[in-house]
Image 1 (tube, rainbow, N blue to C red):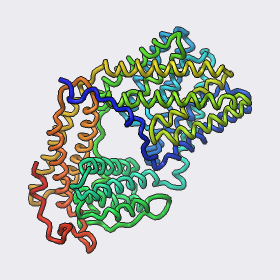
Image 2 (image 1 turned 90 degrees about the vertical axis):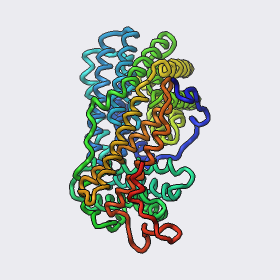
Image 3 (image 1 turned 120 degrees about the vertical axis):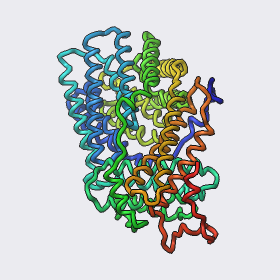
Image 4 (image 1 turned 180 degrees about the vertical axis):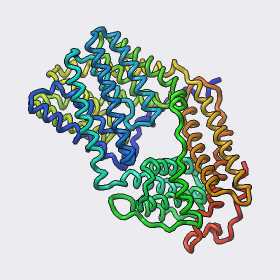
Length: 564
């Protein structure tokens, strides 16, 4: 049985612009600072033909900007190794054969591996697309076995420089990522508190608040467990966000927003007194008991249909473009489409096509300028690099308006080419990649989406029942109650993400939407009860959760909140 609305394909919504990211300028500046020195050096040496290899390492600077610096160092190191590894495989294949069918097949397999690993490890944005762009383009670059060490060495050197560029801000603002994550949690809590827990959009705001708080705790835990006054202050603020999630009607949204604003820049983190007698102990428990990571096999298994879609779609798109344009452009277009479900994949296809079509017009306008001098080519490429990262957060198609001419200009680093031919090839390959790639997404069904939702529902229900049993005890052990609360919060966040992904998938049985809603409602009531039981709800003159908004004593919700 298919889901209720399996063929709903939005158009206008796919192109709607969103708000820019709070740190849109960080990846944009990092990309420019990482790309400029290698490219300008090659320009001075008259070897711009080597820029493709340095770009592989330089573009690693786009990753990890939302991670604490301790975790960012590890993530970026793995990204550099993954980028260089994919490049090495592509260059080796290019040196061993010129058979286009073999090269496309290698590119499709690499794209599937890159997509699966990036999704499983949640590396991104920008995820697998940049990795696939580099490896696919390298497959069709003339290569010799003797040149491999030098080209790979250039990529590694540029990757090391990108690592330094991304780590450098930590010298001035060592807690920047954790401060931003906490501010996002406070703003999400304020948005939920503004609904008083019952207003329009309260269910969506509650889910967004829970996800933001969970993400902020994960950010603090990823930073390490070393004693730190700033981190302690951030933990206190996160507890206040959790209180707002538990008791939105008793929370002042403006106070939360003021704390969030104070976390911008490098100023002092607001110091908030512990909200209860057990707060200090529970904060220590939170630092000591991070949720155990899921095994790699557990993370990879649900991604099997997506890996098959990527491999099949990229291969067919590349084969279809043989003899028509540049096969790797069609392959990369297909690889960029695949999202969590078919509906989101359709939206990305629309965004990719629109962005590329507008982008070739921008390239047509810039091409005469870039042909004046190689320096103009490098400088325009840097400007487009900045624009792409600055705009892509608002909508993928808007960033593609800069990515497309940048990709076209990169092909001219080795030699000048006819602009009309490049534009024609890009349009044809984009259309082939989008059509064939989306067709593969529709053909390869993901019936596991419903099974994953069942598992997420079961996990959330068991987590709620465990927390409810602890709440029923006269004196539950604080560590056990805190562990149960955090497990339940993570289960609810995972349930909402899984339900959203399953809702946009085609060709599957009807989803248990009512059961999802009831499980979420019961789970959040139990979360509220655990927060109250732990003594985290503030009881000072400004915030008295013992009183309802109108001034009358609020009912005791401990028993009511744990009822399904």
